[in-house]
Length: 340
Ligand code: 2U9
Image (cartoon, rainbow, N blue to C red; front, side, top):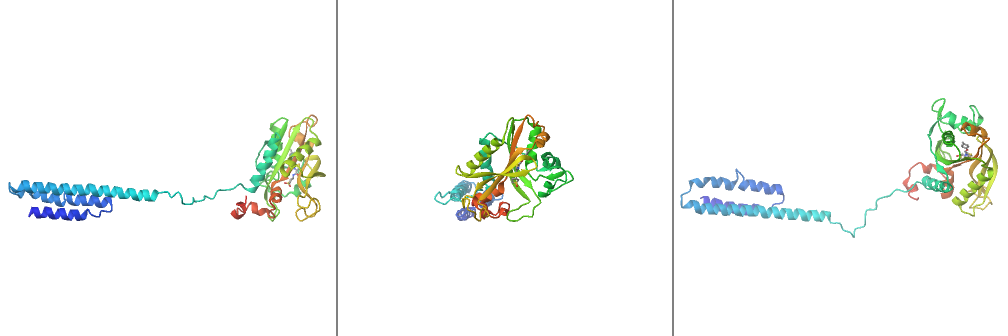
């Protein structure tokens, strides 16, 4: 009777271990046959009822069945491990012939591209880059620049006022005033950055745009230094064959003042759509720093002189790449940005 039970268990076990798919399944089978309440364990508990001559025979058979079940457990465990490893290898197999997943990499924004180029040119001429607050005091943005309260020049650039005396800077010139206050001449800096004017946004106007201004203050600085520096800048940016001219102009914070134009690269002065028929394209404004402005910066105009300049970055970049709508710079349309 026990003998048949043992043989049955051996067959059932052989069947059961044939297609073990999961280690949890294997553990369940081990418990089912060899566990405390296992089927083989249950039979072994009946050994006590056997006769003295039967016990060794059944005992040997029982050990055989146990050993065969343990072998099957070990074999099934090894098979499970092997299969899991194969699955893992299959999963991790890297088919090096597969084309790589091209990670979309960012590009430099066109404004940053040209700003870096312009900064490198001036750094190459010994300038350093100065920065300052975009939320500025009315004093630094206007009064220190010889634009007193209720001066008409204030209206030309309608300003974002936060309070009576706090505003969003409408040009980066306040940075230069702050530098003059802190640093004695010689001073040779450029001040790039965001500026704000409450213009309605359209293809050529934006309430936020970027400027690069510059300032040189030292003993004996003349208009010749201004022209030499700005011609060198323009010819480095646009090529040695760029044709440039200076036109008299007026700014509150420089005297004398001028604007510098380059001959239109498209029509070579004939006049076309790009230069609005002028034949010339305005690049920047400049001038000798007004003595009052030097004083406001704590610099003695009797001992020192200086020149300053300013340019709008967006306009330069639009001309460089033939972009006719400055809103493209701010709308983050990847179809536009990925071209750079
Ligand atoms: C100090 C003294 C003088 C900065 C200057 C310009 C001329 C100029 C325009 C360029 C295009 C503004 O964005 S724009 O419309 N700026 O033409 N800016 S001179 O003069 C200074 C600045 C600081 C202490």
